[in-house]
Amino acid sequence: MIAKKVVRTTMESLDRLDRDILALLQSDGRLSGAEVGRRVGLSQPAAGARIQRLEKNGVITGYRAVVDPAALGLNIHAVIRLRTTHAQLSRALECAARTPEVVATRRVTGEDCLIFDVYCPQAGRLEEVVDALARYGPVTTSLVLRDYPAKPLTDATSANS
Image 1: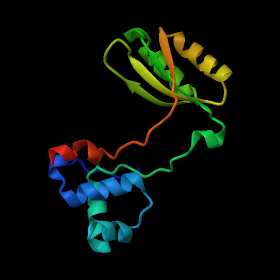
Image 2 (image 1 turned 90 degrees about the horizontal axis):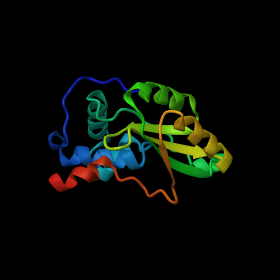
Image 3 (image 1 turned 90 degrees about the vertical axis):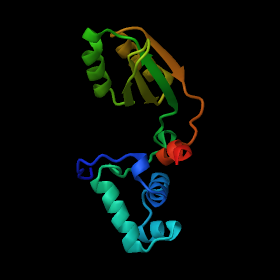
């Protein structure tokens, strides 16, 4: 994890070069400072300084490897929505945290309270995960047919620039 300094950064406070750097690093976090600089028209030291500032200000919070679940034998991707009570919420979150197949948890507004991203090797294991979460309230399970590439966050706000 990269150390954060408490600085209020908004998309409006980032210039075009910062947004371009963020888009590049979101698509390939292994790019060198020299390559980032070349692609955005800066020297390696200038690009490196901008990247360090973005890290220090908490805009860039880390780097990670992206793993193909199917390569690990996790052929079923499901989204499970759970409607629970406030009294059961912490127990449902603990259950999800103990379940390795649950790779992401989101607390949401609306009729559902929690949404879980789940990867399983086969349908029987998905059934077990659904049953474990259903102890805390009604669940709705949807199988993911296809994932589409995520856009960099900078794309979501480029219309405001």
